[in-house]
Image 1 (cartoon, rainbow, N blue to C red):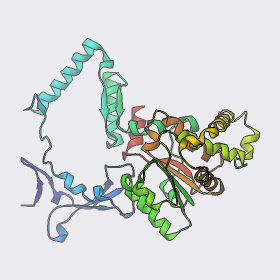
Image 2 (cartoon, one colour; image 1 turned 180 degrees about the vertical axis):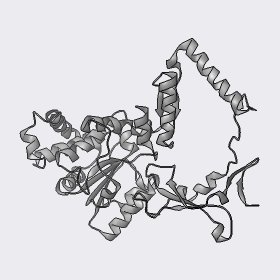
Image 3 (cartoon, rainbow, N blue to C red; image 1 turned 120 degrees about the vertical axis):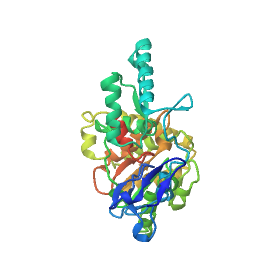
Image 4 (tube, rainbow, N blue to C red; image 1 turned 30 degrees about the horizontal axis):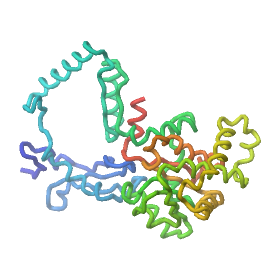
Length: 359
């Protein structure tokens, strides 16, 4: 009889059913690393093995500690093996009838808008589709959202402002092709260690690669930084608008944009706001020397990638902060080209799938 991964009651996975390697995606952070699931019988024991997918463009076979321990999560210890109502185990048929009756009861008493679904950014896009069909198609309400909205709503809004839709204007391959990488509000070393390792290895190969970290804290990511801007919390818009003003004042903005400033939506007002905010740079808590060094690096480097995360997104002015990043990339044409772009690196592997499906 084959060895199985077991819980207290039933076998969950028979490893002998895995007859060939299966390529899938790690369900944890937004890097979305590729993993290969295989049967270890060829190694004299029977169990499920999880290894990095060497051909996957996100991680090229590398995994962080969460990905390396994925096989341990297949054991269903401490998980419900059957549905419960009032803490009593029930058959699925009765449970589904119970849930459906409660939904119908709520609709009858309070209307369709009384029902809401809160789903996960770790679901597959196909799962989102079914959940949306149930909520929008059958129940008839738009009350479905995903936890990835919390970490991405600012980026979504900013992308729509800048590009007209929620798109990502770069790829992973651009990160290691940049000459300047700016980490804004992101402790990449802890939250997205695979991408951080790729940057660290690239800097080891190419010491001229410059790393700037914008973060009030001293984190593991600052160890790699050539320049750390230890900004006061809540002052990112001032710093970013100051950068836009610097680019304008010193002639780094694409001249074709400036000559048609009245035709480029929002540019005139953005430059006006940037000039006003540049007078408030002392509020950032940064020295003029450090600010100027950062501005010069951005202005004089052709290939710039800005990676930003929750320190930028999760703020009452998060959308403005994201647009502050995108604006400087747009006016200098440091976007849509190899080694350039602004990239929100999120906490969910299918954050965008959740956002798109929930729209």
